[in-house]
Length: 75
Image 1 (tube, rainbow, N blue to C red):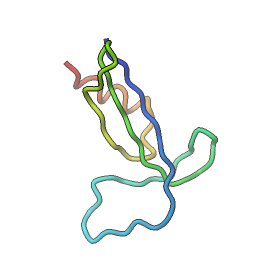
Image 2 (cartoon, rainbow, N blue to C red):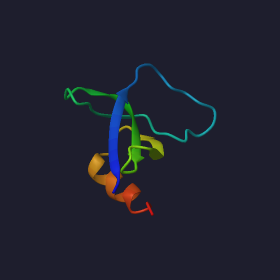
Image 3 (cartoon, rainbow, N blue to C red):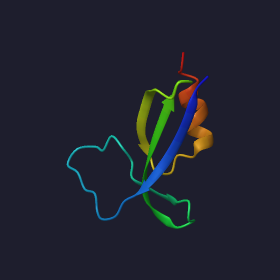
């Protein structure tokens, strides 16, 4: 059995880079329904609560997309 959860973190300011960003800071609605720049974090743990997978993802990626994509890769 796995336990998976995601959360979003709102960020502020301008993020400019000379190289392509590996992560897309995207606008999305946070839990308080505010439209803000966000990045997302996901974590999966085993039945003992030990984390074995984590990632940082685009801030507008919904849980209903992240969950099946990531859980399909779990052993």
